Length: 348
Image: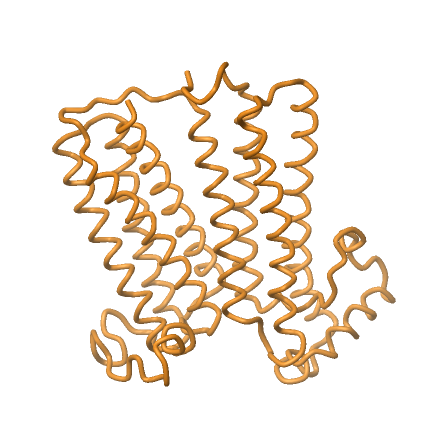
């Protein structure tokens, strides 16, 4: 069934890894809600073990609230916030961190059980160890991000926010790529051999999706989605004046509201056009599951563009912003699966 394995992989291993992937997907969604509700700085300490236990009485609540009152976000933006209002943001951040711990447990404990039952082949063990290490790094990255907003800022660094999100996406991608490799090879229907250009195109498309997720993180990080809330024109023009006005290209890319949002829009258009052209081209030489995956990408990308436009026009309501972030993950997963199938057709 699998060229890289000596024997079939247990279904339990695949189900376990898919469950962890689903939890990571949920984690990113909760992280998006945490960001959009400005909840990420409500817990000012990192306690990996005892932090699993939330405040249990009024004294505990007063303690965590008093620590929050010491940071710039409270002093400059939320001064006078009531304890009830604080609890509203606290639970989002606590839930986000708690889910991260749950993911670690759901990954590690079944790993030990499956290892003891000899269900994990030797070739898979190094990949699982890498996944576990990346998960630990992600937890550290999350705290590194939070620390950036506790002293001199009223929010976290957009650079650290982007790094935190992209690392989560890369972990999800690495796990799914591994799972796709463990699954039974599908039957391909090829009218003509798939050219190398198709694999290059699929790879470039996936890279564009990752780039777009990075740009989206910067849009969120500097709140660029809350201005220029018109479409298709931006500040009265399709290509507005004032782009790249910062002292350097770097600052314009990542710190200028106008340029950052403009780039995010343009890459969205490019992905939409690319995925349609790519799929139409493949439709001439392929059929079956390969084309199903291609049209699935189209079905993920086009609604995501619509979600992005709606999110912008409605000035980023929390529920729509979370859906848009989830849509980005679905596009990423669809592009990843399609690329895996393209690579397999070349190796047949």
